[in-house]
Length: 246
Length: 80
Ligand SMILES: [Zn+2]
Image (cartoon, rainbow over the protein chains, first blue to last red):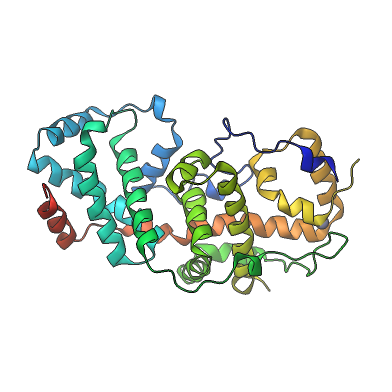
């Protein structure tokens, strides 16, 4: 057995990676991503909670919310609801369920305002709550028939070589990821992933939540998050061959 | 230098990209990639896959407004 298997690759705490080296396209804040409001949320996620301070605007909003101010609640719904709806729709895949999740999230938020300590921004706090609401909805939803993730994982020969040669995706295929038509096909591929794996992929690679946070939300171990994420990425790579391959 | 199979490389690809592997192991990976075009292709596609997840939902993110009915429903559910 090669030494790599013996190496502690998963270090638990301190593993707070939120993106990939050498991958400019997934780094928030780069060209092409500007002017996108919802990214503010993503950027907020990138900042460790202990250094985020609420803006004075948010602080006074929270004070008004705590005092039961109906107008402040409406402002909050209009200001943060859009981002929350986006997140819920990404996780749930349909608008009706997403709207239910956002509504549930606001009910929860009002009930838990006392426990909001201001250690994260209001946006980040609401983001966590809507992710939770969407996950609850996912759990309650009837499972559709799903293919096993194994079917989408690479296969190997006895000597460890890949059993099938990997089709090279050309540069133009990868560039087509910016087109609406390709995006839609990619979303369909993501949708074909088994739910347990799709959820981890979306929370980690799209929402950019860290491994520990995802483990907590899904009530699974950190190692389980890492295993599911890697398998989900591999499976999605396989599913994308017909879309991006030659 | 220790031998590494394509299978092992691909199993640890997320760790490799995360920078979660020790330097000696990274060197073994880099060596394998320098002699194995199949793994280079896999790595390139894998990176593009990560990018694909990001871009797939980009239009969504820009466009979502809260529909008025939803705003009203949420306001009505307040205090229940
Ligand atoms: Zn190889």
